[in-house]
Length: 203
Image 1 (tube, rainbow, N blue to C red):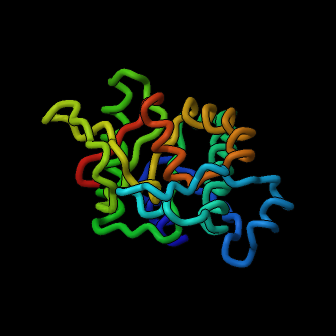
Image 2 (cartoon, rainbow, N blue to C red):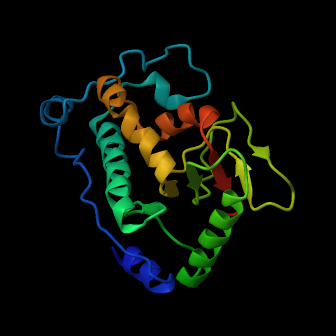
């Protein structure tokens, strides 16, 4: 919560909302199914998976609850549209900034300004630079001078910007996600090829 307040102080007119996450620690899969109508994607486990360790194991309630929480964030973005919000920043409570919040805000605004000039129109910008990615789909550099790249296969949803168009896409997918739920990182990886998804270098 401190991160949100301090980043809000760094950015002009940045409105901070705290979203209570869906509890995946104290809720079982059965409880989540009952409370949210969610079902796990049945084809998740791939016994022959060589690169993706998580695909060899069954889904857990924590991952499913996290996905539900991120889908809730997309609905918040849509609700804020009437207040003129063109995008939202989603920051997980365990996200750690290694530079000042002023610098973070400066990097965020610069990345969004750059994304606004690119095609396709952006849906999501991963601001975090998590090194835990799988070596099966490489990143694509847009231009050496750009601060953005097209991400390959990453787990970088701890801190991202979501445009209204991106929020619309996630909300429209909600019924399908509830019927065949996967962790949010995998959902965004699956969508990356059909959406304007970007990552920020050195984020």
